[in-house]
Length: 129
Length: 130
Image 1 (tube, each protein chain N blue to C red):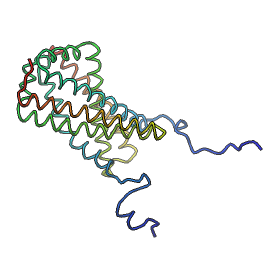
Image 2 (tube, rainbow over the protein chains, first blue to last red):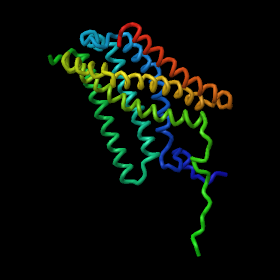
Image 3 (cartoon, rainbow over the protein chains, first blue to last red):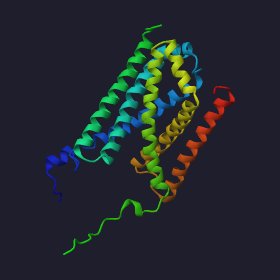
């Protein structure tokens, strides 16, 4: 016999008050990152990284810009999930914890957004100099 | 009456240091290191979008001794987090829980990450890229 209410069982929420969504998202983003990060790592190794024109031309190719945008989106999400887990575990006190979590969320949106915007600028050939 | 000293549950610090907990801690540490690497990656992309001038500045930062050291550290963190993350994914599927399997896959993750890092940076050095 279970002491949980039928509604509680359906919602799947444990004692933390929310379900297993975060756990699943971390795993699914991890699987997506295996090919994406390996592609990026190998591309970086193959590129003449000091040569602006070569790197710019590489990222401006549709396939590379698309994969780089996907990489940034999934990487930012996965990294966000991982670091908030660390804060939830080690930062105590509601005020401290909430401030840290808010700061992290804003920072990740800023970093992810700026990176995506940079990739789009290169992809659409906008050059400042 | 003096306050009774109440029994505590076994504390984290009484456990013997071993491969399992060390690698678990290393997974978190490399995760945090890689989060900082994401900031560096963002800086690199923004400088690339900024044009030849800003890209040259960024490339110089990455090619400096501190930059190279950070990149080597991030290379290890990347390989280790990738390999140990795969261990976690296998565990999530209910595989590899036996003692020998855990130890073997753990040592493999850490040694393979070290080996791959060494191999990548020796190759970069060999081909005159650093």
